Length: 170
Length: 224
Image 1: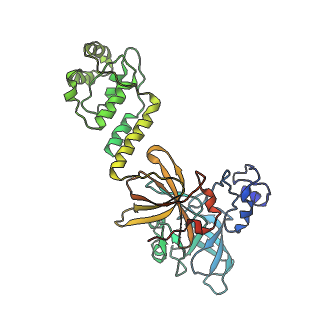
Image 2: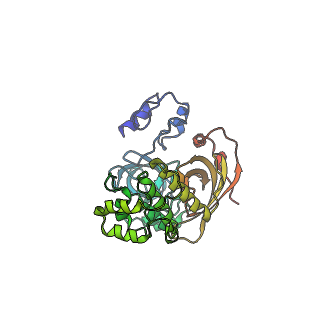
C-alpha cells in the first residue's frame, strides 16, 4: 500500500514493488483516472497487478446508487481480494437518489479485477479495471441490474443472483 | 490421461546407479507395479537409456512378448522382481548372453521433457487441429465450459503467444459489453474444441501489450 501511494506521487516511473524504472513512455496514461491502478505500463515495464486491498478504489457496476467504493477490508485473505471475493467498502461517491449514500459501509462482490485469476482448466482471465457489485450481508445484490460482463467464478462462490442479473458471463 | 499417469510414475526420483547394481534392476522393482512385460536390455550402456526406452514402449501398449525373441524373456523379469536388490549380479551374468539389439540413439536426461512434450502434442493433435497462431491474428475460439453442454465462443486478437510445449498459451484481448477482457488459453487443451484464425493484422511486435493503451476499436470485433 505504501509503495503504491509512493508510486503515484513520484515523477520517475516506479513499479508496484518499488523498483525504479527508466523514464517511461506511458506516463501520460497515469491520468486515466483514480479508479484504475496507476498504469505506468510500457512494453518493458509492465506493472504487476496485485490483489484488491485496503484503499483500493473500485467501480460499482450495479444500480444501487453508489459510483465508487473504497475497499476497507478484504474478507477471507490477508493478502487481499481476488476475482469473486467479497470485500467491505466505504462508499466514496454516490448518485443523489440511490439505495446507498456516501459514507455508507457496504459489502461488495468483486466482479472484475485487474489481477489475473487462474481457472482449473489452465486458462486465465483478467479485466482492465476493478469493479464490484454491492451486496448485503447475506450475499444478495442490493441493486436490480448489473452492467458489464461477470466471470463465472461467481457460480462456485454461490453468487447465483448476480449471475442471473448479468448481461454477459465471461 | 492414462499415458500421462504412467509417465508420471516414471518421473519419480530414480535410484542412483552403482557398479554392482545395474540401474535397470533397481528401476524395475520400483516400476513393476505400473509397467508390464518389461524386458531387460543390455546393462552395460548408459544407465538411463534402457529405462526411457521401456517407458515409451509400454505407454504405447506394445506387448514386448513378440520382441523378446532376441532378448531375455519375461521369465527373467519374474526372477528379477522376486530377488529385487540382491539379484543384481545374477542378472548381469544372465543378460550378457543375449544378442545386442541394434544401436538406438542415447537419450540424454535433458531431452526427456522435449520428448514427452512432443508426444503429448501428438496426442492432442489427434483431437483437434491447431493452426499456426501468431500475435496479431484475429482468432475465434470455441471452448466447453465447466459442466455445460453449450460451447462458449470467444473472438479476439492474439496479443501474445507463450510457447511452453504442451502448455503453449495464447492471450486474447477482446471487448464484451463495453469492457475489455484478456483471456489466456492453453492451446492444446481438450476443452478447446476449435481454434480458427479469422484474419490477421500486420504487427511488428511479438507481444502486443501496447493495445491496452490504445483505443478500444483496435480490439473490438463483431461476433457473427
